[in-house]
Image (cartoon, rainbow, N blue to C red; front, side):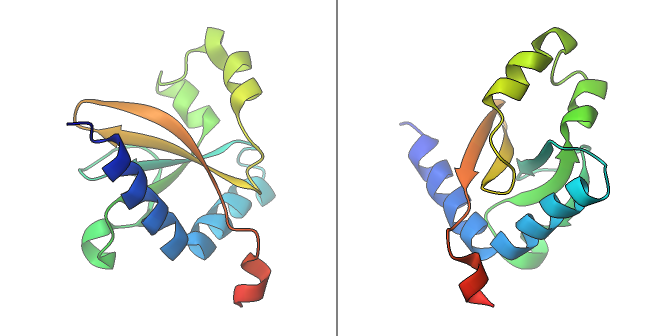
Length: 123
């Protein structure tokens, strides 16, 4: 059975629930000149990558989210230097999309999920 639809559904639910926090974390990474390429490491088990911002056990979410950056991914060898330009080409606007590095037991992959259009109207 393909786990992908379940994973995507869980991620969408968590992103919608925590969108304000995720947007603020992404914007902080950019505003503080940490990186122009924020990445959220998304996981269900302990992960030594990035800074934890949402803990699934404490928040009742499906996934935990850590804020990281392209630079940390390069330093840790997750993104290889020779693939850097390719990564930058596929990376989407961080003000419109959430860049997720989804870590599962059997592997990991990058996913870009759009933020909702009307965040300003939710305040």
